[in-house]
Image (cartoon, rainbow, N blue to C red; front, top):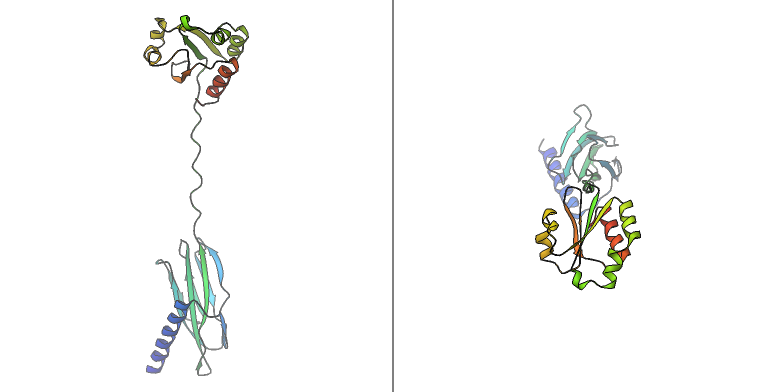
Length: 229
């Protein structure tokens, strides 16, 4: 009995030394373990069989604290190893008593792949633009330039905006209707001329200096319709 205990202590000491050094083979004279393998985190368990003519002693270690294993009582040559449900490495040592002599220790590793990480965050829902859009141009008539006049007096521009479900209005900076539209205080803080776009509920979607070309106005409206500002 004392001899067996001494042999086991020697086995544990040697196995721990090899584990720290990261070496050793799964096959030695008189004893063979399965080659190292990789399994998924949900594999539940795996049976490791030692090919030998003698009795086997096992030592199972893991980087996971959730490790569980059980040696077959009826056949010490097999051990059932529970697979931790997380990324980890299981290291299995074995030694066999063959014809009264201890073999060298054999080692094999089981690498456990962890569960997949979280997928990409879902895209935020697209902002719903309620039509028709209210496209408001506010200016100071005393400072109207040819560029501003070209935008305000353009029938083709108005027609194109109307085709995009836009209601276009032009007001002077002191027009009382700005109060009705709820943009008088905003306009008071801006430099003329300005372009303000609201949805059908009056929600402000855009406010900035008026682009000085018709194409610039159309580009702004297109971005608002696409959900941008």
